[in-house]
Length: 425
Image 1 (spheres, rainbow, N blue to C red):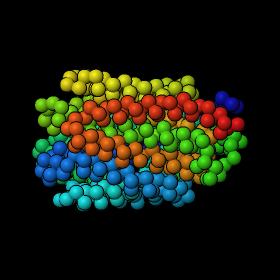
Image 2 (image 1 turned 135 degrees about the vertical axis):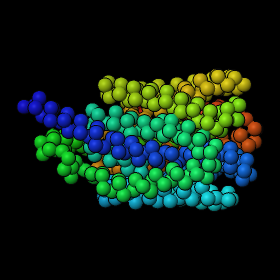
Image 3 (image 1 turned 90 degrees about the vertical axis):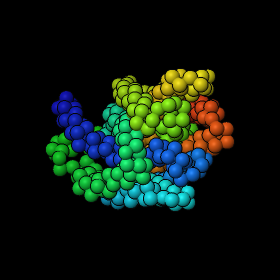
Image 4 (image 1 turned 45 degrees about the horizontal axis):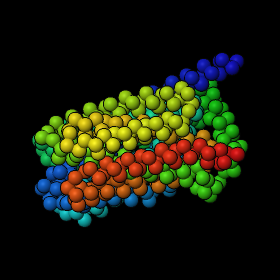
């Protein structure tokens, strides 16, 4: 009987891989394209519109102030209303304002449109992380998150050659027009295609549906026994706070690297926009492979702490290489590869941690809190790099900042193990 139940559950999970992961993956590719395409437009906007690198760093980062505001409310709406409605509405919203970024003629317009675009995207990422926890039991969750998060490197792999070609042939403004339009197109598709919860899934057999719901309910009951569940306790929980701080330092490096890598390579070499685009694609392709392998290994071992910390250490090594060889382009390239591996490697294991001890609306709010605090790093990182570049005319000091934030994140990851024991006692 047990083996039969296991078979049915495995069949249900197989359908989830086919039905859920590819679609949310595509949506996140679209989201990340809109989020970081400004990285390729920074040099032409500086040259053609006269925007300073400091102002461009602020414009890149101000997206995340709007993003921060709607994190927890947006995730809560996903729990209460359902992912399909929330994601469809805000896909359309960030698509419209993503297109408007391409129309800017002054810095203030750029600030306003980027801020509103970030607000419109605020519910998406934490909402999907919570959405995946409604479908995938812990045994498969890190791999599911890792596959979803692989959209980050894939979007960069796509964006590199695409952005280089668009800027070279029809101009930088069309980069925003085309990629914003993708979000608008997928808004009604998301509403039609997505299913909010397993009990609504007509594409699962009754036996598969029951097996999946039973597995998820069993884990939820076990988690509920570990710690008193309330929204207030979730936000005050030391684990939630530690996760938020880890994510903040890590994401500061993530967006500093993802947004500024095209400019770093363009200004540090003789390559044109198309050549830089292919270099960026290659860097993120290596990170993509590592991200998948590492996330799968985390699921095979069911170990999360070391699998979160080790890639961050690799990222710090990459930044140190960039510092040690400031005038060597190939050393810089190796450093950027290691930085990217360090940034991508922890995603699957890290996002499996919150739902190991929090459930339901409480988990939704905690995930939104962690992601909202963490993504303030999306403001800090790009702004710091732009400011350093404007003041020193070099990126060298920025690499030192990367090292510091990676190290702080690693220390907090290992402290998290002790805090988690207190939280779940």
